[in-house]
Structure formats: structure tokens, C-alpha cells
Image 1 (cartoon, helix red, strand yellow):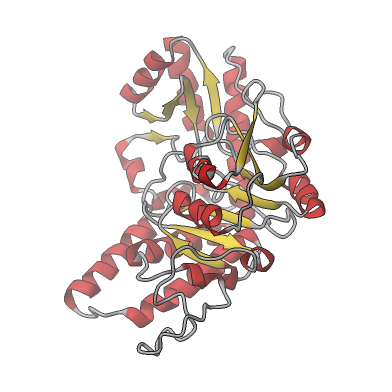
Image 2: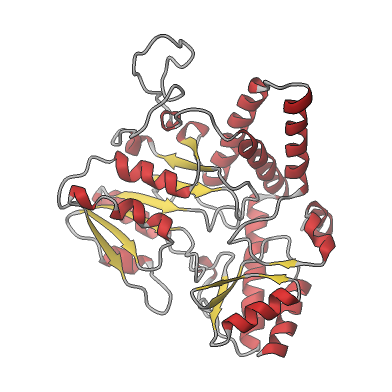
Length: 377
């Protein structure tokens, strides 16, 4: 195992004494990202103001790294503003017919709901699979499929409970039944791996500001060639077309790659930042990151259970766990405020305390959390 002490030197906030267990909300800016941003801003303000060629290299390299993370080629990836934008590209690009069905569930973050509810005027029917004790399983989703089901859209990891659904099982059925399979990956990527080929995923939308240590305001989409042939971009711009640099040739011939969904100027600082954060994660090892995240999650659940706190994911197998550990408590507001007063950063969502430790967090930090909880319960 690589030296985690050395890794932690890349997290400047640790000097403040904080224990940050809130990566499911937003990740800290790590030192390599901070250094890159300072470098780029300095260049653009002092020397290389128009550093477009360097930026294009960063765009391509970042897509290659994302492709490695989810097992696809860089040509299948396009940058967007955020997860919601990506899901709207999907929702508005499909040729819907009245009576077509979409399957969601009642624990989805709104980003994976409103783009599809917005199709009501097209006569599209949205079915919400009901959760049981904070969980919607792959079997629940598969059992909800109807003859009119055209699309299933799910979070890779549920934002509130942390449940990681079996995407491979659902993807296999979607492929057999010719159903479009979409995944909101923002609460998983950077914590655990996603293999879009193995799981037969047609579409992915994700932001970069959580487990990936990127900046707010940058996301990306993945779409398979099969799906791209079926959807039409709702918006197009000068970077969507093949003759991009023949500026006075207005032939609307869209690019063959996912770049047809990139309409214009991209988030320069966001892409430079994401390239650095992905290199940082890759250098440690994407698989090692997942191993450490799972270790921290299961250890924290064990500590909480020993304290008499039952988490939502207690007794579930590792394949259903990612980086989020949540529990309900009648005094959740008081617990949250006490933790905050002790420099322990987590979230309170829908009355639940939500911890989200990353790979660099230490067992000692998790033990300190338990010590504080023992005093307040």
C-alpha cells in the first residue's frame, strides 16, 4: 500500500485540524490542482494570454483519463456544465412518442428527476420505483419494467443512503430489451470504479466537484455510439460541427464523436483542474482508491454499529457500498452541530447524518468521530 502520509501532504486543509468527511457534497481543492490553477491564471494574466493549444492538449488528456476511469475511448466523452445539463441533453435528444415510459425511483437526487418530468408535454410516462428502508435494488428496477419502458435512469450511488446499485444486472436486462440505460455517476466516480462496457451503460452524466476533486461548474457525459445514433442535439454551436475551423462554411455536419454535444467555449480552468486531479488519483491507483474508500466506509459502519447506531447499509455486501455512510437519529441537528463545533465536517440531509470519507482519510480520524458521537448521544 502506498504511503498515505505522503498522500495527505496534498490536502492543505489538514493543517487546520479539520476532519473532512463530506466528499459527497464537495471535495477539497488539492495541492496539484491549486498549483495548476495558479500557473494557468499567472500565464493568462502575464505571459501566455492565449494558451489555446495548451488547453486543447489538456482537453484531450482529461478525456483520456476519464475514459480510463470508466472504460471507454475519449471520443465517447463530451464536457458539459454539470450533471443536470448532461441529463437534459439525453432527455431532450430522444425522439419520444406518446406513452413511452421512463423508470426512476423515489430516492433520486432532483438532477436525475426534473429533466425527465419535463417531458410531460410529450406524453412521456415516468414511473417511480418505491424504496424500502432507504434502498432500491436492481431487482426492484427490473421488476418495474413494462412493455412501454424506453429508458431507465439511476444514480450509481444513492446520494442520501450511499447504496450502490448493481448496474451490471440492470444493464444486461436493458440490453436484452433494447432499453436506454442512463447513469448519474456523480456520487460514485472518484470513490469507486464504473465500467460502462461491462455494465452495458448507454449514457453517463457526472460533475467533477465531489470525489474527483474537481471544480464546480464542470461535468461530462459519456454516450455509446449506439445511443448517439438515436439522439439529436437540442443545441448546436460552432464546436459541434466537422468544419469547425472553416468559419464561413455553414454546412451543418455534426462531428462523429461525442463532441457534437459541445457547443462552444469550454470551462478552461475546470478542465485544467480536472486533468490534475485525475492524474493525482491515477498516480495513486484508481483501484487502490476504491479499496481504501471501501475500507474506510466499512470501518466507519463497524464503529457506528459498535456504538449502537445502525446505518442504512448495515449488513449489506461490499458491492452495495461506496463512500457514503448515513444514519437517522431523532437528534440529528444537535449531532451535526456538535460535530461541526469539533471541526468534523459532514452533512445533514433529510434528517440523516451523512459521512463520506475518501481514500486519504485515516482510521484515527474516524475513531475521533466516534468518540465525539459517544459524548453527544
